[in-house]
Image (cartoon, rainbow, N blue to C red):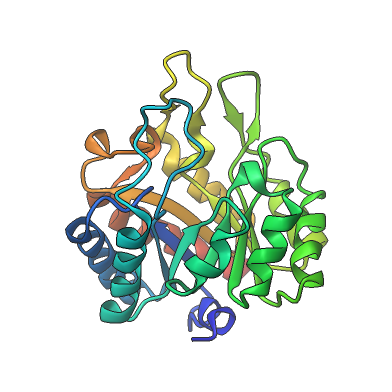
Length: 273
């Protein structure tokens, strides 16, 4: 699959979507979420990439859930990809993971904390997969052009960047929506807005990240209004029981209404162009 072409395949010039659970918890859960998302996105003309981390490495506490096993989780992603016919994306954390994960997925994602890691970006680019780089909470939008250039210099031809908020004090993030057009111009690639992680409240004393999921719709509307190419959403049937990042996830049964509203807004934005 040519993922670049697929992401721009909407007949209505709609945004594309990266969505799924924070981490793969089971095959049953992955298929439940992916099947539901596929049905909705097909009805709304939204190109979908199913997201699921096969392992969570950036955890505050040693006892935090990290995954069900690398090979098991990657095989689940590959099965979703094959049986549902939709592309899939997962995170990688170290350069040696790139080639391994690339055998199972269509897109490799670089976590925000690791977006300046040259060896990781180069290893990801050399797989030939589409690379999505999350903007570090500590970086300006303009500086993401350097991360993109590393991927391109290493032979990567398909790349996007994702904003997920900027550190604001010790336990909060803020979204500067000027960053979307700034990164589109500086990076010359699609820009995605992560409308769930940008509402995290990190670095809590308990070691468990908080969140403001009630504001997901607000962030999503603003991102579409300023012209984001894609959206990133983590969703779960029951966020309070999710094994990772449940505090800022969107309940699965709320995603249809959200996407319907955002598609209406996107159509209005397209009319104004």
